[in-house]
Image (cartoon, rainbow, N blue to C red; front, side):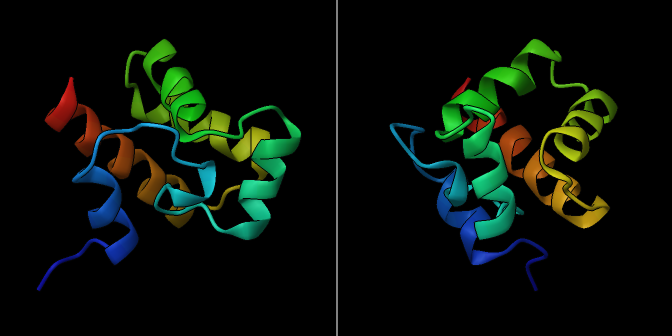
Length: 90
């Protein structure tokens, strides 16, 4: 049985393109709106932050908590989603 959500699976199997931040695993409407308010409207802008942190799990999760109030599960889901996407496409 898979431990990743359908949202995660959909995200990591396709190129980034212009996906909205809401398409990231762990990011729902409330967190997504907070990210948009902070000018992170596209998934690639969150990916850019992830890469600026050199894919460091702790730094990225701390940033996500600070920027939009993500809880530990949401942080983990988003981190794993971006890490797996990078492993496949970069």
